[in-house]
Length: 93
Image (tube, rainbow, N blue to C red):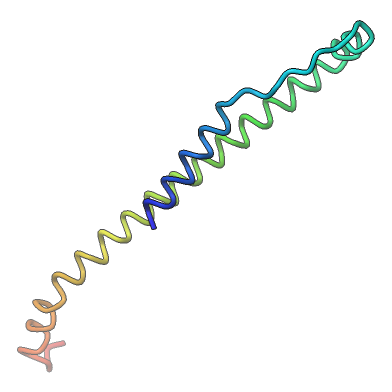
């Protein structure tokens, strides 16, 4: 499960690094681009923060799963000892 999640994360990082193709424009399109440059800048900023929040969420999800897996394995290794202690004096429990 962790290996599949790591593969998805790596693919998402590669896709986000690849630059978008720039389209060539003529003079009229250049004038429109200068007008909408501030709106594009705001959209790029929102996209960046959206991706950063997504990666942070994914990282905390992964850390939670790894910690839970470690706790579960720890509990399974001590379960027989705990049962032995609890069965020695059942009235005290």
